[in-house]
Length: 376
Image (cartoon, helix red, strand yellow):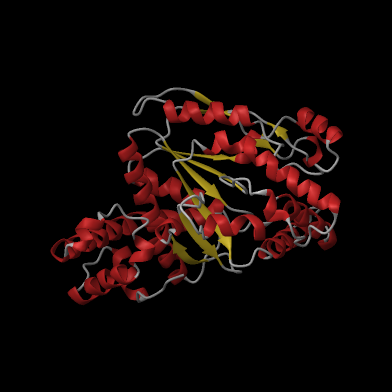
C-alpha cells in the first residue's frame, strides 16, 4: 500500500484540525504523483487536469472532500471492523486504506451512480482472503454518509437449490462441491439484477433477494429466507468468478498443475464452456473491481489458516490435506494462471478486463491499485 503521508497528518484530519499549508501541499503533491492510482477513482476531467490552471483547483478539491469524509467516518469504521473481529494494525495501515482505497472508491461509486441516474451494479471479483467482506462492510458505512443506500449480493445467493445440485452431481460426478460454473441459477440472478437495475430511482419498491444458507443439509447449503430490498442506489455483486469470461480452447493446450490428467482437462474445459451461460449475468455489471493476490497460491495458505483458527475454537474443520484437495478443485475448474492475466493485464481493447485491479499481499493488504484499461 502506498504510504507517503506522515501519520500525524492523518491524525490531524481525523481530529478535524486545520492543516498547515505545507501539509496540504504534501497531500496535493502525493495525489498528483500517484495520479495513475487516483484517476480511476475520482470524477476528474482529463481536460481539466491538462489545464495547469485548473489542475491545482481540482486536486485541492479532492483533498478537501476526502479529508472531510475521513474525519466523519473513521471512528465508525474503526469500531465496526473491531466488532467484526477484523483487526487492522497499526493505525497507519487503516489510515492508508481509507485515504488511498476505500474513500476514493466510495466517492467514485457515487459519481457513477448519479451519472447513470439509476441503480449502479458494481461487480467484485475476489477469492477468500482478498478482502471482499471487509470492503462490503466499509462501503456500507461510507455510502450511507454520502447519502446513498447500499445492498450487497453474493454469487452464492444464486446457487441452485440443494435438490437441483444433487441432480447435477448425479449427472456430472466431477461436481464434488458447489461453486464452479453450472451450480448457479443464472435465470434467477438475471431476474434479480434486472429488477434492481430497473427500479425507479428514489422510489421504494419491494424486491425479494435470495440468500444462501451454508449451514443447511450438513454444510451442503440451500436457499434460506429471502431478504426484502426496498431501495438500493448501489449494489455490490461479489463472487469468486464474477465477471470472468470464457477463454479460447487453445488456452488449455498445455497442462497447468493441478490440471494434470485428461480427466482434469475435461473438467476445466467444461467449466470454461459453462462460463458462456453467465455472460447475460455479467452484462448487468456497470463496472468490475478485481481483487487479485500477488501469488494465487496464497488462497491455499489463507484457507489453511482459516481452518486452523476454526479448529482452535473447538469446532470441526478440514485437515491440511483435505483443504489442499478442496482448493485445487477450484484451481482445476477456473485456473488463476489461465484466467487472471486477461482480466488484470488486458493486452488489447478486445479483452474485457477489470475496470479496477487491487493487488493483495500475503498479509491480505492492498499493495497496488490501478485501472488496466488505462494501460492498453
